[in-house]
Length: 136
Image 1 (cartoon, helix red, strand yellow):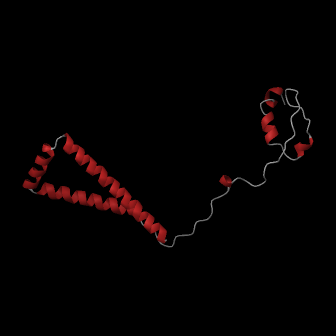
Image 2 (cartoon, rainbow, N blue to C red):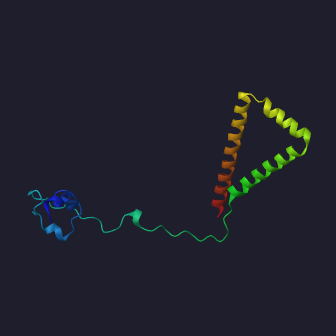
Image 3 (cartoon, rainbow, N blue to C red):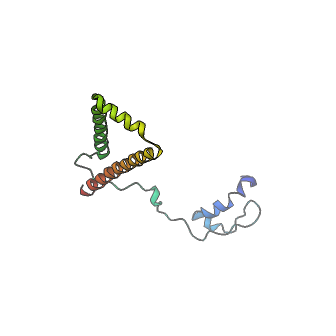
């Protein structure tokens, strides 16, 4: 082995020396100095992050996908409202007049209400998921 590869790996050799290498205490390192003997060997057990995950219990009931149910209901309600608004001329005119009359503050309120509705839906789905998971 060349001195070029030995010097940079001396510290690694020191850290990962095996039991058989412990007898060679005064072994020369690539730069001519003596390497200190390792003080402790590595543990024989593998680290926890290498061990396989523990087995999960097998579910006997199918998992309820609450997000799909809630979002499906929200989109069905939005679709129903859109169709209901577009079917009658007076509702369509009233809705367009309301949209055109909104100022910057009105749009900010509509945006805040939309964000609040989004957070409500996400919280509802996560709450139902947690409640269902605790029972099973």
